[in-house]
Figure 1: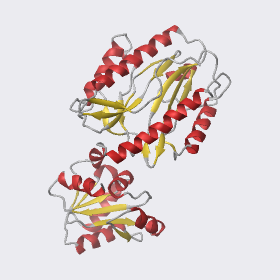
Figure 2: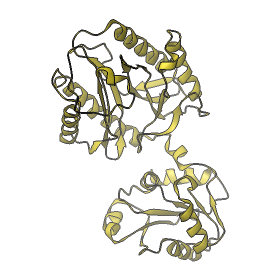
Figure 3: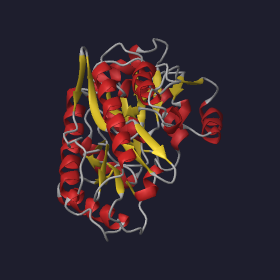
Figure 4: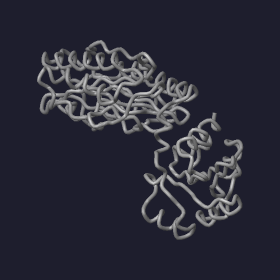
Amino acid sequence: MIEHRIEKLFERDERIEAVFVSKKENVRYLSDFKGDESFLILLRNGKRYLLTDFRYIEQARKQTSGFEIVDYKGKLFETILDILNQNYTESLYFEGYSLTYSMVSDMKEKIGNKVYPLSFSIDEIRSIKDQKEIELIKRAVEITDRAFEHILNFIKPGVRENEIVAELNYFLLKNGAKGFSFEPIVASGKRSSLPHGTATDKKIEYGDVVTVDFGCIYDGYMSDLTRTVFVGNPDNTMVRIYNIVKEAQQKAEEFIREGIKCAEIDKIARDYIGSFGYMEKFGHSLGHGVGLEIHELPRLSPRSEGILKENMVVTVEPGIYIEDLGGVRIEDLVVVKKDGCDVLTCSTKDLMVL
């Protein structure tokens, strides 16, 4: 599995002799190492080095296979230069988008000028998931679905938004997740018009609309779920908005398949919402990739130039937000297939009145 991922990296550019991998998620993806403060040197000749410090040496040996584990002892670029010289390798490619200017400058000073940014992003390779990754994401989604079902019995008048977050966190940890994949959103009443309305000490009131957006981490892989529910009799306008958002999401999901432009998927949902006069009330992208990061490639946005490929995992999350009234967002996680998509999220999208 790891070997195949590394092969795909070198296939992208035949000029590459050696690659310096620095982004934490990419280090894990290409080595299975789960610790911090670590880097990879991958050579076309088959040599693999994991550079870390004393704290992670034992862990690295247990979690990786086929890598020489090197303690760089605070001298990262000097250690890299030694490795390049040992392998008669002159040029080194690095992840330009994940390194600071000062770090690149230091690298050039220590190693020389034959260091170049990759012409592509390793994140692009990561955007297409293998079966192992999909199974881990499915597990994260399963725990998240169960957590949402659990929290429905907890949401009621008098309960504070941040108490809902605490209860979700407890459930996730108790059921095998590492924790939240991002700071959860719980926004009730008029606050639900805030797309990223993180929880406060506001109490749920009768008649509130409540948006809950959260996910969990399972063995490094993440989930993302949003549902909007009503506590007591909902406002008629909010019911109408709910049904528009639900239908927009369904239309977008029905259009997803390999080969479709990401911007076209966004347009399906955006145009449907716009046909009811709410175009300006849907101000964010339709979705994003999910995997080792909660926001990764591809982007389902009007500006995206990406094209969907089989086994990409993306969110589909249209929303409508009206200041001083409230908002609705519904979000699923789906796997792109050749002729459609598999919706991983199982939580009901029927309008729920608690």
